[in-house]
Amino acid sequence: MVFAASCSDPMFNKLVLPPERMECEEKGTAEMMCIELTSRCAGSCSFCFASSTDAKDSQTLPADLVRKLIDQAVALGVREVLYTGGDPLLHPDWFDLTLYAVEKGLTVGIDINIMINQETARRLCRLSESGLSLLVTHLDTLRQEVYDQVHTAPRTLEQKIRGFRYLQEAGFPLDKLMGVITLSKPIIETIEETLDWLIDEIGMRYVCICSLKGIGFGKNLQHLEPSLSEYRRAHEYHARKLGEHWLRIGPTDFGKYFCRTYFQVHANGAVSPCNPLRELSVGSIYQEELRTIYERHRDHLLCRYEIKGYCGTECPNRDVCFGCRANAYYYLGDIQESDPKCWLNPHAPEYCYVEAT
Image 1: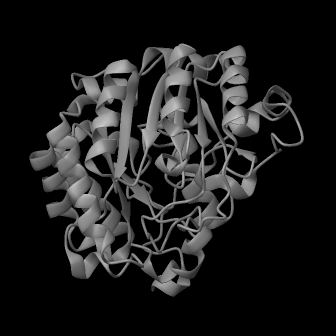
Image 2: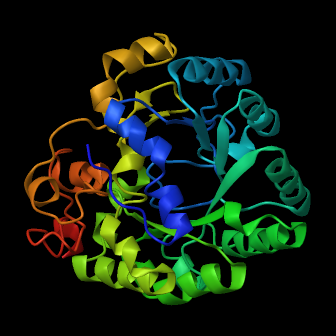
């Protein structure tokens, strides 16, 4: 197999073309496991594909079970873990579980909603000195009137902005900080100023632009689907800020080597290919051992199947990208189809959902 050539951007090489992940993709093995510690979250995103709320009865994985998962993942050869949610910081043992994974020799990341206080910012900073490799944060816009269109609690915007300031004050290392923007119709209006703020003022080296998914709370917001032209606008501005090479992975998060080398364990115990593709779960850790589920469904979990159409046979970026499989599934109903939200795909429609037209 001939691997894609690296580029001069160290962040692109780290996220899209890391040699260890490329080797795993060639062998058909997992490099990373994502664990949804809890489905609880106070971020108030009205489109949340996990249907997360701040309810006290949200699903949460017991700490002992998470430790068992970590041990099993290490035995499978997994080398990275990302704690997701919900908001993993609402798990009562998130700090200790992070240290446990680090002690097991894993590269560890945490994906949070950034509604943190000063003490939590300091704890995250201490973790960054003890082995935490990545902190993923979510902010869609700085403008209150836009934010209110896709969030149920307006006050959370101020809390998120304050959370970023607390991280800055605590001295959290910028090379370990990543942003996420979920692209929806209202968010397009401010996409440029949001990217400017995250990259220029906060100092982020990379910001991931995620696609709105018609799952969870998003099922009722299909009218907020951005057009193909709006996707292009967002990603082309993103590339002007961070480099044209980022256009090579279209609307995906990190390209094909990422998606083909990880799987997700959800807060209810289900195991699926990725966080949004929870409808395609193939087993539960409450019923079977993780190894059993993984070995039986490895090809499904690691997206090892033929990709149809342009993404699979024609796109010149096939060496780094195979389109977002969740986009194909939720917009077209076929996980193997070409990505309908990629502006590079000549067969992609301007809109997929009738409600958005």
